[in-house]
Length: 370
Ligand SMILES: Cc1cc2nc3c(=O)[nH]c(=O)nc-3n(C[C@H](O)[C@H](O)[C@H](O)COP(=O)(O)OP(=O)(O)OC[C@H]3O[C@@H](n4cnc5c(N)ncnc54)[C@H](O)[C@@H]3O)c2cc1C
Image (cartoon, rainbow, N blue to C red; front, top):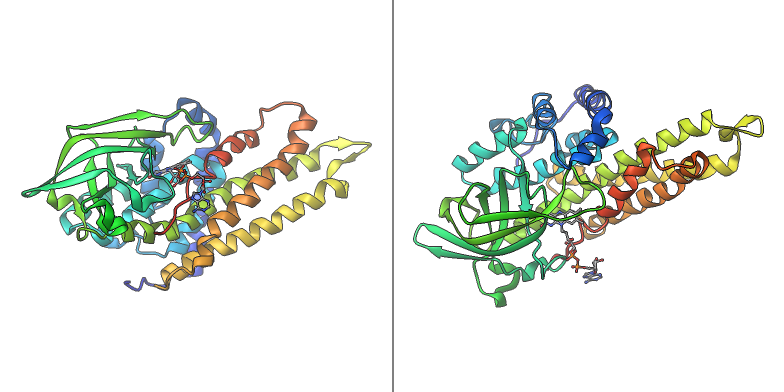
């Protein structure tokens, strides 16, 4: 892996501050509107691109800032602090941007990576099928070579931004079923190709991201849209998922931190028995405990990204980072919501919208490696 120039503390602090201000001032106010509409606001996504917040670790020759994955992870957390859904654009932009930068032809990468970084295009990743989720090596969508083209037929499901994306990185079977993971290849499929239709699933939360199915009806693509050699697709996607789990972890941590901060403010303002409820240890001890868990989960995710920056393989135990970070968030919501929801007696605080989102994303990173 190419060594990236070291990012200075000052640069990192500046990038973090830019992301935080954008998140609080421009994303947070209309978070719920976008969630209700079930769509991203493309003007905001382009603005993130202008600010250099999408894929800052991607190479400068493709429009990125050439920073580190750690820098990118820090930005992801800050954006999730204001809007968990919009942070998905960053985590998937990094995952797919890196796959394209490393495995697509120069021509294809030069076309799509800059569009991702500028916030001009959303590109989705399509692995899951109706019959294969965690056990991705068994996927069966077919890509049959015909001269200088491939013909794709089959179905993908549970695909994030299925109905909003301009293109998809699709994992398809070019070999036989018996070849398992070795018979899978990756392709870039533009959303406007004849033979592709899409539909939307009904989700509990994260509706601005949304999930859906893709139907490939003898869809043709040039062989130049293949990413890397035939049969290497599974390795590419699993390499990507190893570090993307850390990004999704930081998304959850950002949203959890926002909820926890909100809860602290409420505990300081709310009076009971002549004192703010924050003066009662029964209220504050669980919150302090959650702060500690969030700090620990954040360090684990950033450590995973620093290993990626160093070109070191992610040790299997760190792949579990995605599990560790999901638990604090779920526990945090259960605990943090209780003083706010039960005491205020309603379900209208921004924190409550995070509950549904949290549950929807619990499954998203479950995947076996072989
Ligand atoms: C919000 C969200 C967004 C998503 N976005 C995308 C996307 O953009 N692109 C994409 O391709 N997919 C996406 N997915 C699909 C996701 O990757 C799959 O849901 C995931 O791989 C699990 O597959 P499954 O739902 O079929 O569960 P299954 O594979 O059927 O598993 C069901 C349960 O059994 C458990 N399980 C399975 N095997 C084992 C085992 N060996 N040991 C122990 N437990 C096991 C699983 O952990 C899970 O709890 C998304 C899912 C969600 C929820």
